[in-house]
Image (tube, rainbow, N blue to C red; front, side):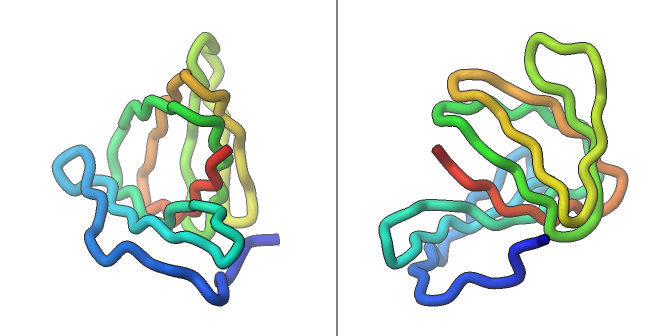
Length: 105
């Protein structure tokens, strides 16, 4: 099931803009201190590096992704998620706007 909303959050009003605007997100902090980001990736093929482990949850649209050290592209669509290890990277291919929540840690 796709997360539809978060209640009682603090939102960073300044957007994180990556790859010349092809990825835009806002950081949010839940009441318990948990940090996430919510954003959109526009059509592109991009490579992201991770510090902490991440779970990418698809809210709308779809993508194909490939984790570091693998050669297989996998698909994630609305309601789907994929996990990325910490201190790693992943490639993402988007052909339509991909709306996501990034769960850290």
